[in-house]
Length: 152
Image 1 (cartoon, rainbow, N blue to C red):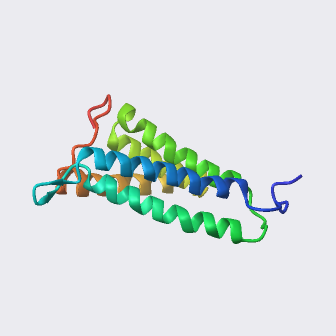
Image 2 (image 1 turned 120 degrees about the horizontal axis):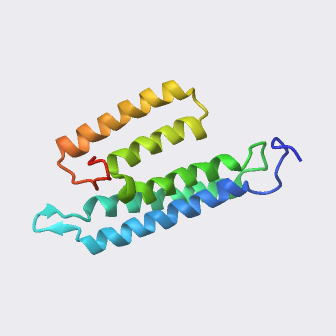
């Protein structure tokens, strides 16, 4: 069977992806509540994880519904699973490699592995995106990201 064959029923990779997003969203929601949503009248450490977790859960539901309602199509199931793998590797590498390095590798992985863009362009765009991420969150908002073995 070729990769372009029509798969009966829902695409396995696309059917698993909403479940993975929902699990990660539920975990973020749970941890956000545990960190404390408010500190007095100001948002606490758990405010953003709570919002992101809720958004991920809200996005996972229509994704799952649309996947189960869509007809069989010519699409390999490897791409959604690869996307989920890059996301899980990013989360796992956040404390091992540091926040900035993990975000850079996530963007590079998405561009090269998932979207199959040229490596040099992917490297430049991932570096620019990481620089923007650093400027907004670390410098602008003073978010303390985990430091990796290289100090960033």
